[in-house]
Length: 475
Image (cartoon, rainbow, N blue to C red; front, top):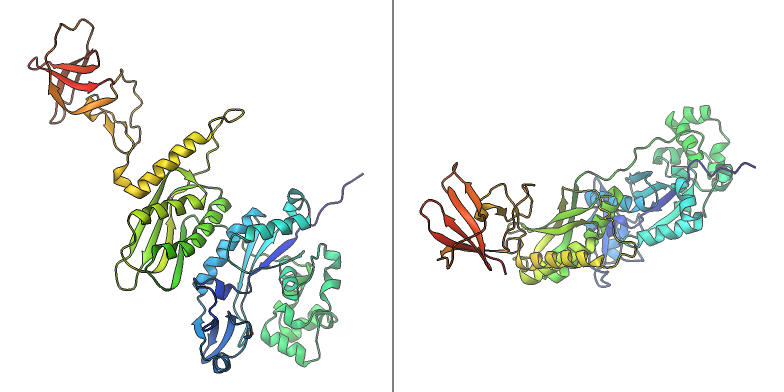
């Protein structure tokens, strides 16, 4: 018996109706002075988002200000909206890698933008255990970011957008798509304003009224693109749109509403940016060990804080913890009006092999966390890790950057070298064979020495003059 196949495409539309407002770093709503965001065309300005529930989108800004004289009015920040939309797109990678972003401007005067992330969840239905479990998973993912969302599901991208605006329950197959949409008013479809006005003025109220005409008649009245858009809505024509992929370098800017001089207050918007950064890392399936946090200012120079971790991570809370340690020891020098995050280098996540029952697995992580916190609190120059260098002279055989420059096998070396060798007199003749080091003839510090172990001392005889010196300690 053959199994029935799932739908070829099933699009989850994640609409962001308050994105023009929530993309900004605004404080909580103030009843005395709520914020409204407006769009503008020429001299006309109208509301597209508001903290005041009695103000509707599309209202003329002048009449709104007459009713609420204490309003704070701000223009749309389309760059901030686009960045926030990308952040939600990265988060949606937790559902599927087939993602399309929709960032539609207002169609005309007194219209609102439509901003959404479309995710083809058809390949993920079996993985998540059905449509209900997938929607629950989507809500859990979206709760990580501070954006209001509305969800709907349909077999085409445009139908899912219509379904979210009409608040329809999931439409799971193409056969029922037409029947679910025909009764909808034309305003839910967001067709171009000129086409919608022409249809309304000629007595068309719903999508069903439009579908009574053939494609040739619609093209003659509304243009050749209109029947194609209608076919894409109903799934009878493909809807090719570019897939969203996270950019190769991470750049995020957040313009603060006011200058903030308390570094603890800066942690709140930074936590939001770091949550978005974590979504970006997980979407690309990479980790990072370095992140730059830039505080921009209006009157003084910018200040950059570079956060480094011992091992790469995709956990944003690690960077937040390091930044808190850094600022607790050395706070920012001036108020900030803008936050920026930058990251350029990424690596694939490492999955180290551990023991069967993994006893002691957390020891390395605890050590790395301690090193990172000490570096953040004391500064990068105060903490370093030695490594090998390609030089036989003991005082030059190591470096401070922690990298291993050579792979040669070395004889035993004491764990502690004196900063300067000290004069020493042997009490008895050395009986064992020495380690002879003759090196440095190419630079200004040549040596020719015979090294011995004398109890807990590492000593050498200078072959040029026969003098003896202590150079290291074994314990």
